[in-house]
Image (cartoon, rainbow, N blue to C red; front, side):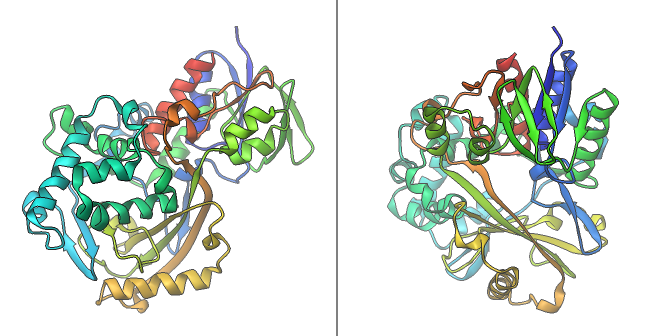
Length: 429
């Protein structure tokens, strides 16, 4: 039987749910607080170019993403590239793009390198990810990689992604990260190519939104929601109220708790107990490249950002008018002081760090510098996470919560988000 379904949140998760619900014959309306759709996959104008607010990559093994590209007639716009990886440690920049360079990597001895390689190989073959949920990630890494490799390589990378929350993360986090990168190899490919779409994710979101509208899905932007009550009813900040047969809220748990006042104390406690990570991501448009590496991992603790993502090492510079696009992300807790720090202060600290890492970099090379901040991006996979994550159905009749915390045995990326949309609709209906 056809139902009227309201969706709160117009990111790719909300659009994915709307897509599948409409195909099942339901009437769907999506409310988005921002003036644009796409959420973390949305685009913005940076200087004279338009590109993604946050960095994204498409792997050949990202089946749900490629299925969407095919449906949107965008498969021909996909470009796969073999990229290089850098490693900045002890004040020096090294290439870690192949096995020979790995063996020559000075900061680790031969035994440490072998144990590091063994750790990655072993994780790529683990089938029972649930067992890893019961083991602290640091304990597991020390067991397989040894103390020196863990202290020198793994801990800086864990802190960069999880902050101090790495202390409560399970080994499933490392497994999920490695598993995605090895997905193509398990299907017979020798190596995984990174890829992108001509024009960036903004093209995907724009095409997706247009297709949904053509099929009758109502997409309402600039429509912040005040609360979701029994009925179920979506009340907008504007004062409008809309009644539905079901409502799906895709907001992160800390916001969902505020939007659905009818949740029980037990439900609120489970949602509040989730450990979330946020991100402050700097986009810098430069006159010339910094290096030949797409990703440069950083282990020195004085560096104020997580990594250097040189998008132009992946994307054809012609997409940016011959300029270089670099992302400088910093993953932090939602209450981190970085969210309150003045933009000019962040600019000064981040550019000063680039000068130390890249001696040839000059501030006169900077054409544009912008910050994107999101306090709740993904939930940290803590011990026994799959048993602790709240369900999608709530005690408020007809109201469901679906968000990134429900990505249980994976890492947050577009492919996992699209997969979650399909799984959620199947489970809810």
